[in-house]
Image (tube, rainbow, N blue to C red; front, side):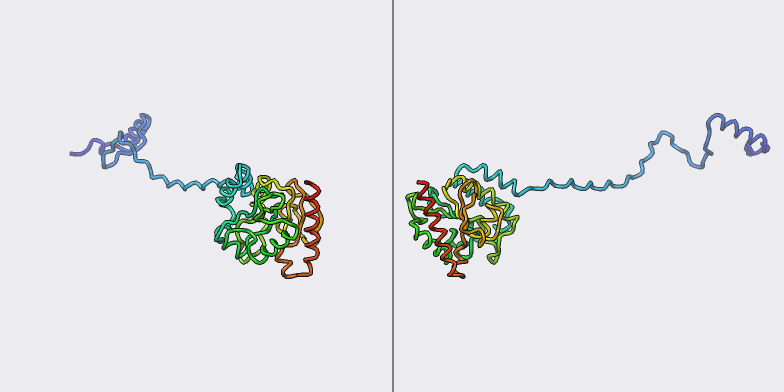
Length: 260
């Protein structure tokens, strides 16, 4: 059967199309039925890029050391906190944590540089050839690390409690990390005099280097009188310098006697 629409002329068909457009029809009828109630599937969204992690707060190793050292109420607590301090890489290559030796009631605190091979093995400061010379030097003015009487005793520690590889000088950042522990160490021992043995202690305590210029002149370190002295290892290499070291020892003895 012929469709009624097939008999329409061009003008009639156009008029019907315009009428349907006025009614809102805006699509031609296709061959397949369309479900107008079907929810159109959303086009897949591109995967969101993982946001960049927020920058991690920078850790200030010196501030961490300052807080830890300030929390120590005794030498035992200070030793534990310092040995657990994680930010100094020297601890990774050292055999032992070298804290101190001698009588903590001593009037004289000797601050050395860092453990050497013998000290790293034994876990005590100044036990090698330089340490043996140090013992003889202070015995000459009546002081010893084994003395029980505080007036006759010395107490020995180092700026660095771990041995630097190949006995190199400690780096400025390493000294800065340990300085809060050193300052608290001196505060807890409370000596009358601090002896700065070598360049590293002078750098840490005075902010200056050049031990051959500094030695023999009283300074102030950690709020106490301080005497810079050449390290015993230097004296072993330069025996002629022992005369100057003897003069420094006599100055220490004189100051101790005057302050009794």
